[in-house]
Length: 125
Length: 125
DNA sequence: GCTTGCCTTGACGCCGGTGTCAAGCCGTAC
DNA sequence: GTACGGCTTGACACCGGCGTCAAGGCAAGC
Image (cartoon, rainbow over all chains, first blue to last red; front, top):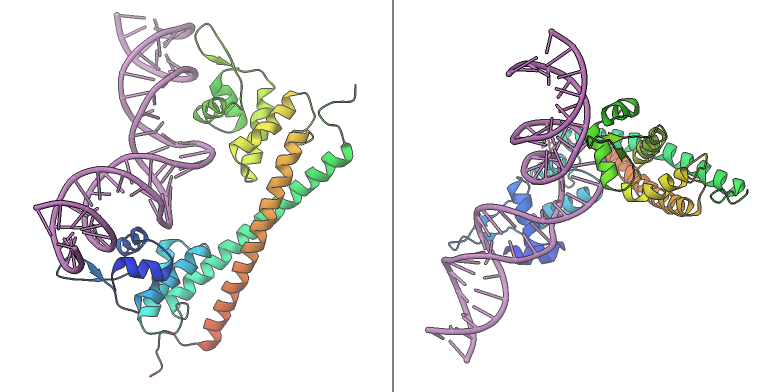
């Protein structure tokens, strides 16, 4: 499979696949041309990367998930390294959720205060 | 008040204050030197900016809050323009909270699945 | 031989808030 | 005079995941 075909199948671009390869996530053999030749299994790898990215993982954090897939596992998150990253990420998300919830409450308070106060820019003399 | 002093009082840097000015948020007169001279009221403005930034507002979105303060209001969020931004931001935060909560649940599921499955990288023959 | 379409590497752009360095002016203290 | 600290503008660096353009090689059809 050439890069354009894999990109099409994975719903992304050749540029993106080269970027993943540059960061050690996707692998390709080379034709005599120099063209990248991909195994069919790389499609699952790319899918793993895309879904992890969409979940907020950084590329570096996705590496163990890909390694886990390559080791032949049915899912990328069943290996110890991946579990470690998973725990860390969950902690980050929980933390972020906490702070974001606080922010949300502050903003809600400000909104209701602004509405009940109804003083649109000192319109009352 | 010179820029260094205001930066100190506001817990930030001269560089940052110049950036805010460049984006039309902070104002300063100029000494014969060319040195920026700040009114005492600018400290509140800078505080407003810093707290809004910490709440996830972008600089451009903070402009109406600053304008509201300059108009003499006791808080930056009581003017119509600011309220509009506030509503929009609340919607964004709510949306983000929703997606982040979904992500969190997926990750939790993956973690518990990994733990109960206890197949650390195909260790079982 | 020429066009067309795939591929290659290399490199800059973006976003947003700030750090940081350069080169130079200003005022005060020694 | 000179050393020092504060100020000025201008401009590059950073982070991360790409988009995008440049310049060129390769294969296939006419």
